[in-house]
Image (cartoon, rainbow, N blue to C red; front, side):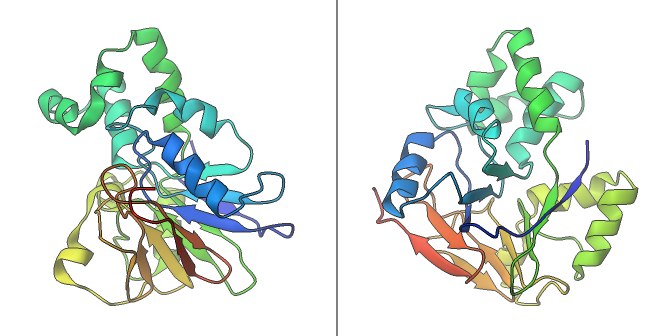
Amino acid sequence: MSRFRHVSANTLGRDLAVGDIHGHFRRLEQTLEAVAFDPSVDRLFSVGDLVDRGPHSEEALDWLARPWFHAVQGNHESLAITLLRGGRLELDMYRAAGGSWFIDMAPGEQQRYVEAFAQLPVAMEVETEAGLVGLLHADSPFADWATLRTSLQTQYDLQVIEVCQWSRRRLKDDDSEPVAGVRALLVGHTPVLRAKCLGNVWHLDTGGWASGYFSLMDLATLRVISSTPGA
């Protein structure tokens, strides 16, 4: 498993990013239809948390098999991996966070999901004409993207990965220090009422899995495209 992935530029269509999906793939499909997403040329990038909470979590493998869909590993994918492969996990917390669909699944089926989730990178960078755009689930533990890239490529540092997948510090502290080395860093994890930029870090989880709506970001322009709440 490569914990870091580099993706070449899309020369044919648009690259869009979306916040946490959490099993609400029907609502995501409606959002993509509303912006005339064309899977023959466009690509969609997810900042993680494909599963739990929503009614269609089982479809995550189908989405990951689509050549135009790319995702980083969120903390909810990490929870599934931990459940099956061992590690510190509070089962009641996981169930309360929407993991019952996976916890109650037959072990053989669980294995299929974990194998796919374990292949997802912790962080990803995508080339655009205006420069690199980074994606991870929660926050960067370093102020420089190159340092994170090197760390993920050369060592298995649980503390680094934990910040990438679990940290809410930036929003809590209202930290507007940019992450050097990328034009923008796109994250999710912590719900916000509308897409919010701190420094060059964009928080895209506008609650499309709950009572909010999905926000899409065009990687080329860094323009946020939002469907109306409740759509």
